[in-house]
Length: 281
Image (cartoon, rainbow, N blue to C red; front, side, top):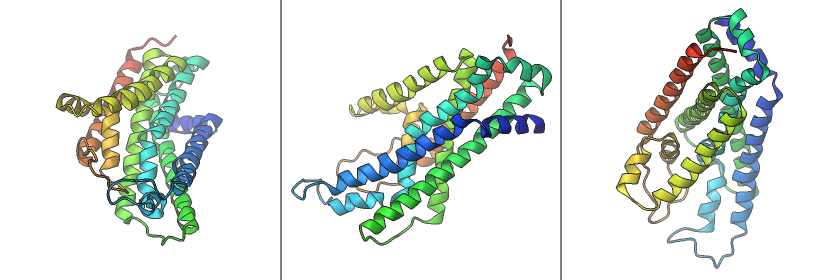
């Protein structure tokens, strides 16, 4: 197990694609979630009606330090999950493309030990992803707050810790899903393609449209899928701006976390079963 962990750490730590994914995620957070959105909000004319009791100052507070944990969480439940999916696929699918899986399993540790080492390294890398994005969100929010002359108020340390764990859990599901698809299809291209189709089309597009129907059947169905539960987990940290007729969270934060944890465990178990039963050729 120790040897597998060291070898997987060496492979992934020195792989440029791992850090390119993190750089893309970081830039999306700083530029898209913060800078461009903040600039767009500042450009709203005073004559625009933002809703009952909502002002431009309320919207701008979204980008200040008091809400930075909500901002990087929103990225984790969407684009962060996509980047984690690609990371999981690259960690496993590339082994099939390079033809190195057979060598690794015949000359190295057992199959389950090799899988455990790979998953442990992915989990550690996701911790790095979460901490870097959280630091980027905190620094950017502080810079924007200072630019607007706003007081720098920070969330409670417990809320920050919970947000970090929640973000890691969301990314963990994306990575576990990518690992599972790689073992299922034995390649990277199809695994990434189908994974992105599921996350971006089924969960992001279809469920968002179905949710607008306010159907109890649809709401109950969504409770059994990871994407809506990731959204509910993000919403459990509260909203920076409260609008009238704002939909309630699908489930509680605790229930959403348990569902995501169950999906991570299920994907890990299925990956282990596929690896044990596959003929590595």
